[in-house]
Image (tube, rainbow, N blue to C red; front, side):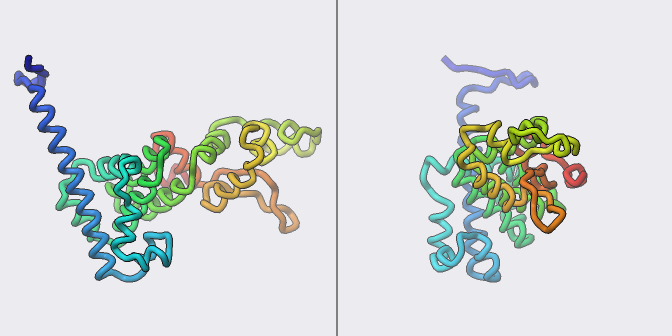
Length: 264
C-alpha cells in the first residue's frame, strides 16, 4: 500500500517522493562537507601559515598536514553526528558551489568553518552542538559578525556539561546574599548589589564543589566570566558574566542576541 501526503496544492506526495527527498538532502550535505575539506586542503597548500595554525592543536597538526586535518575532522560515526548537524544548519539553503565561494571569499570564513566543525565533531552534548550550529549560522549569514561568531564558537568549544550547568546558574538564578553564600554574617558585604561568588556556587551545586575552582577558571580564561578587581590590586572571588558570556548563554538558550544587546 502506497502512503500519500497532501502538499496543500492539490498534489499528493508518495512515500517514494519522501525517500528521494531524504536521499537528495543527504547527498547535498555530503557534497558540502567535501567542499569544506577541499577548501581546507587548498588553504593548506596555498594560504598563509596562520590559516594552518588556526586549525589547532598546534605543531603536531601542522606537521601532520592534510592527513592531520582529516583525522581531526574525524570519520567515526559516533562523532560525525555533531559535524553533520553543524554543516546542515550553517549552510542551510546553500548549494555546494555557494559554500565553496563563501569559504574562499575570506580566510576568516574558512577559519570559522573549520573551528566550528572541529568543535562539533568533538562534542556529544546536544545543547552544546545546537549552540555551535546557531553561532556558526550567524557567521555564515552575517559577514559583519564572522569574528564574533568565531569567538563564540571557540568559547563554547571549551565547555562541557558541568561548565554549562554553572553558567546556567550564573545567568538565570538570583544570587543569595553574600552571608548566605559564605555561611557567615556580614551586613557590610550584603549591602552591595547581589552577585554570585565561588563559595555560593559551591553551595548551589554541591556535586561540583570539589571542581568549582577549575570550572570557574575555564569560564574566566574563555572570556565568559570575569572577576572584580580589588581595591589593592587583588581580585574578589565573585563571578560576573561578560558580554561574550551573555552571547554564549543566548546561543545555548536558542535565542542569540545582537552585539548591541550583549554589550548592554
